[in-house]
Every structure is written in C-alpha cells, then in structure tokens.
Image (cartoon, rainbow, N blue to C red; front, side):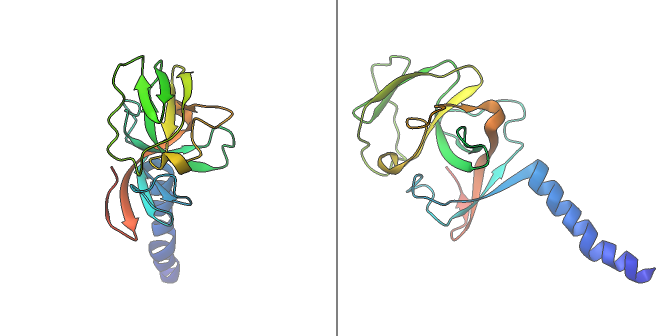
Amino acid sequence: MKALKEFIHMIVIPVAIALFCSKVLIVNANIPSGSMEDTIHPGDRVIGSRLAYLSQGPERGDIIIFRYPDDESQVFIKRVIGLPQEEVLIVDGQVYIDGAQKPLKELYLKEIPQGSFGPYEVPEDSYFVMGDNRNNSHDSRFWENHFVTRDEVMAKAVFQYYPRIGLVD
C-alpha cells in the first residue's frame, strides 16, 4: 500500500498536472521554419498562453499559435496583421488597413518585403496573419483559406525558453 501511495505521488500526480497545464494553460511550440525571423528562429521553443484570449481576441501585432486553416493537424505561429471586418491591402510590401494613406509601422520585419496582394476582407471572428520574414513566409497571403478563425487560435506566444530565454514580442 505504501508503494502504491509513493507511485501516485511520484508519477500519477505530476503527469496529471503536466497534462492539465498542456491542455488548459499553455501550448509548447517548436518553431520549424524561418518565417518569423528575426523575432523567432528555427529550432526555438516557445510557450503560449491559452488563457490570453479568454475575455478578448487577438490584437494587431500579437504573435499567435494556431491550427493551420488548410490542414488543422498542423500548428503554425504568425503575427496578427488584419483584425475582424478590416480590409488588408499589401502594395509593394507595405500593409494598408481599411484604405489608410500610411502603411502599418512594422519594426519587427526582417527585411523590406516584396510584392502586392489583396485586398482581403477579413471576416467576422477571423484574422489575417503574416510572418515577420515576409519574403520567406507561407502565410495568409498564400493559403486556400486566407484567414485564421477565432476557434483555430490556440494561444498567444508569450515566452521563449530555448535556446534563448525571454519574452516574445
């Protein structure tokens, strides 16, 4: 009986806590590509908060972890650019929201983006997302389903723990 109690304390309880954390509190993501460079690099490990969007949805500039709209068995990480019911237009690599005269200020970009895309009308409860390494990112511009729905958003990327330690922004 004592051995059973020790087994429960040493194995069952920690496993239950770990499962609870991974299913309810956090997402542990491994970054497979360079689409988010220089913010996040291939091989980096990132923790996302599943609780970040309980009371409100993602905001422009947030880095989100989500199920890929064209194949929900895959998990992607990108930056939110277009919010629900906005129009996103990309001209010569510059992003314009709702016909604005000035493009978004995007200080996080790896290099000057190329190309013109859109316009995209973001549906209600959906988001238009792009990588920070725009010239090397498979993102909303190229997907069959251009938008990430609110239900596909798993977490907000918050913390990087390998190989560097720090907040993700």
